[in-house]
Amino acid sequence: MQINYDSEAVCAFVAQCDELMNTKLIMSNQKIRMLLKCMAYYDDLREVVDDCKYNFDYDEEYSRAIVNLGTATVFRLPNSMRKKVALVVCLLLDFDEPRRNFVQFLQDFFNSEDRNEAYGSFCKNIIAPFKEAVLFLMSDEGKNSNTEEKDSKKREVNVAISEQTDYYIRTAIEATNSSKLDEAERKDIIFMLDNLKTILDLRDAQLIKAYWLGLKNTLQYNKLFNKNAQGLEEVLKAYLVL
Image (cartoon, rainbow, N blue to C red):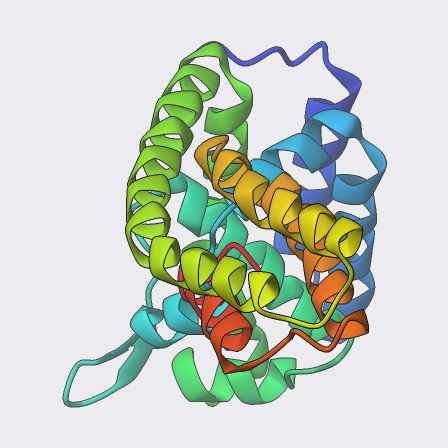
């Protein structure tokens, strides 16, 4: 794995991870915030995070990470490098907000009489693999595998969405045709509905979301956002596009 350690982003990321892993629990909140700021500051790091969070379901992956061993319940990161990065970033954001209590998280999954020891286990099992995953995805090898995996997911999502949205789009067009809107308005809305199929075929989640927000607002404004349109929205949400 070839990593460019001359890169300012790589050096800053490694330094922040190491500081987080080498600090004490009492200073961890500050170090978590510094790591998040680092990842938000550098374009290369932001790109890795954005790619990893593409079509990522945080709640589902968080639940999957909780493993009951009988004598203890542990938190295990997924094998996928992309999911690993997305899950840890979301987790750290939860701790920083705080939407999730960090100390309680340590007690639940890295329980120890010594809180600093529990924190050490957290760093070993969560931060260290996270650091390795980010560095891998920033390497040439990681960038190639990341592109292939993302493209594969796009194809899978595209097929499923196309199959399940055809009915809703067709029904929405019929409803628009039979509405009391004037002809020009009907044509504009039908044009937008027709082109939604094209947008879905592009397999770009951000573009789909932006287009849908415009279409939804248009339907709502013209009092055409009915159960059928809600069904279409639910399909997009089900496939993690919205």
